[in-house]
Amino acid sequence: MSETDTTPRPGLPARLFDIFRLVAVIEGVTTLLLFLVAMPVKYLLGAPGLVQLAGPVHGYAFLAYAALMVAALWGRGWGVADWLRTFGASLVPFGTFLNDPFLKRRRAADGRA
Image (cartoon, rainbow, N blue to C red; front, side):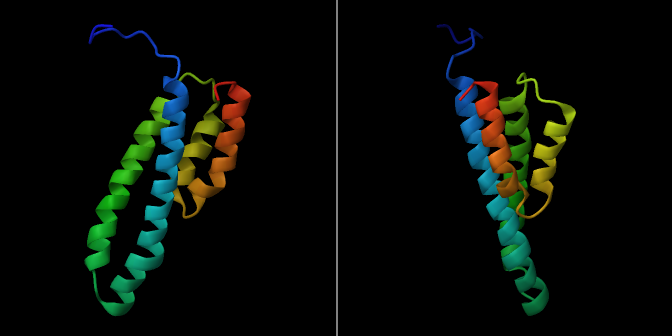
């Protein structure tokens, strides 16, 4: 296979979906660390160091979530509501954790497990 060959690889969609779910957990954990640990320490104790560390980590996790969401879900025939639900899950604390069972069910229903 040449470097410019764009032939789809059979296992790639499933692996991308698994990677997306892992990044969703990471994004959720960084959200909770930022909101429940770093920000209270900053505002209650006046120590902004944790926010300066956790903020960018969460930002990169969020960007990875958004990019992998598109890569992993594109072409699966999901409706607008499914896309909005999955994206919206990244915007609220615990959202990615609550959305994970939905992702599992949809993946099984897609037959691309």
